[in-house]
Image 1 (cartoon, rainbow, N blue to C red):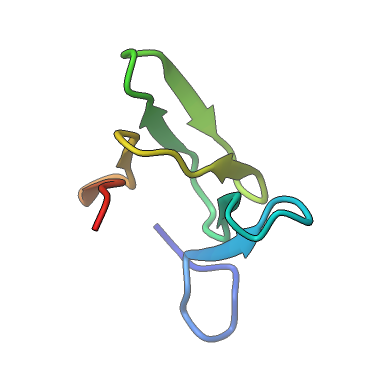
Image 2 (image 1 turned 60 degrees about the vertical axis):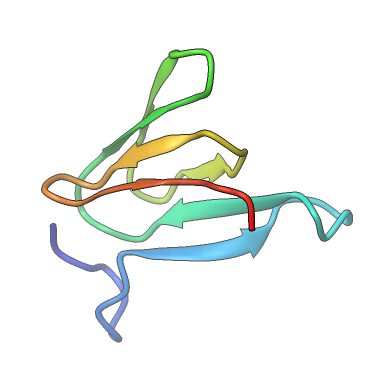
Length: 71
């Protein structure tokens, strides 16, 4: 995956609404990601699109995978 941002970042966390507890992850890369929610539903996150972050969501960034977990 190649970063579109000059600093090499491929994603950025941002607020999705005036409610600061609602966060999203914006794809800054040149390829789509796959996200799977806690019910098993898959969604493609295209470049420049934002995924709302929710507990249990798994994200495949190509060779790297992650999961949203609570603290």
